Length: 421
Image 1 (cartoon, rainbow, N blue to C red):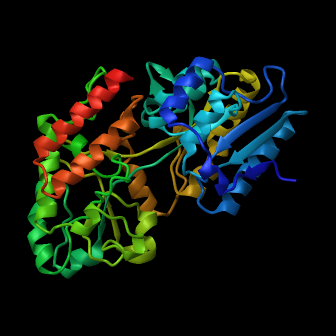
Image 2: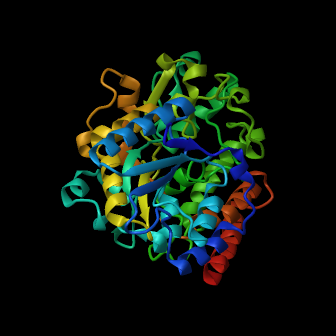
Image 3: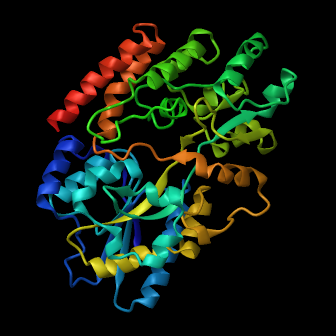
């Protein structure tokens, strides 16, 4: 019988307080692992469907567990795959009740929330392995000077452009800057195309939508000390003003400011968008065709920067640190993580991971943009800040507020929330 199990959608209906409240209780409890204590020969891990195909995701983890158990006689590893939805609420509830896993798959903006429950990676990751990580991977899991997980994959969201659209307007040069995209916009509109796509739905993560523009303008979400927000700076206003111009000019689909239809129903899928940073090549390939996807570095104003994430395995306090650490180190080895990375279309977190896509020019182009990526703010209130900022950005795009008014209102609410926390 397979040791990799899947939790059904009933997990989505877990009745629990807000994640932030539960996490406070979990931090006080200071206990996360449920492997049965330091003497246990069982390691439990919670993960999510990183490989979209459920059968392939299961096969990957089953194979890895079998190989690890073969090397560790008498040890049992139980990998449980949960839905992405409501994952923080479920995990926080489990930690607060002392029933969390030994190991959990986390992405960077989750790490600060669970920091008090996580065993620093230096306690189990060998120094030579740590040196093997790319700067992007290691920086993205480091909070307060401590690595809080062992990265197992990296990703990049560069600018992608539809070659067919550029052929239709007789252009062969692709935009590299805000100014160049804006200059193309009227010509594209005249031919029935949008310059870009922007999802203003408040449920969308700002990492994929507004934050890249903020970073490109030279701004940031939080001040350097992390105690206050900084997105209402001159750079933030410049980014939102630029975005508002695109919406007001009809250079992006105004309907997407408030709704999120299925991808196949959007102008992107219908071949009506020149360039976007909100979709990956894998997203658009079924609609554009691989041969029509042009990968470029993120747009530039003050600098060229885009969003990329890092998936990491973190060890929670309360379990067998040595055994769970051995499992994490095994899973994070370049040769073992390769199946997860390639199966999901991602990239190695370690320098020794090499080229997973020889002969694939498209993936090579995406991988080449990794040094320009950032995983976003590593602050405890990062997600809550998104919750107050997203509606204000939407209000500005709908003409209800000026960019400055919207960002100031969001900053006031976010800073008050942070001070209460």
